[in-house]
Length: 158
Image (tube, rainbow, N blue to C red; front, side, top):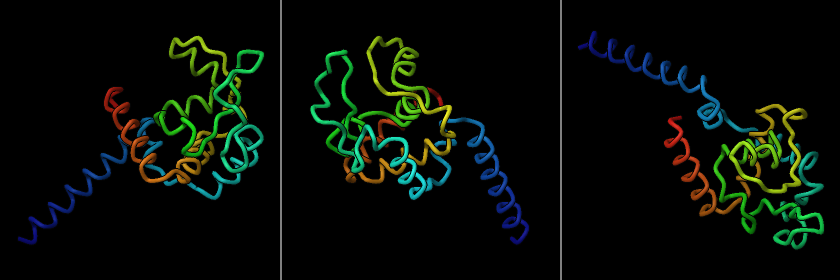
């Protein structure tokens, strides 16, 4: 009986280690598995995002109407905006690459004023900012966004 318990424990430990190793090899999986630093995310949001998206995530006035240049003002990141409508991957790419590049990579031709921050922020810092933003949403929006992200991971095989 004792041998069976020890063997079971070893197998379980190996399985957990194997899952962890697989998990850290992919960006999508790693994005989900690491613990976010919400305090750092809040601080970085104020430094890099608040000037356009608002100190309280409220976005710019009339954010749904394009300006004279055809570019939409910065949307809110609270539950009144559409940020929670997008998967983790879309939000990460949009932040890292910038709106124009992220959309172009998806074959979408759309004028976006969102700059990329991949040259100023590490991937972990971007994840922390996104985690902070998501932490401010009501449960319903967090659940919907998490479900959308899970579906995308399944479709992408990650």
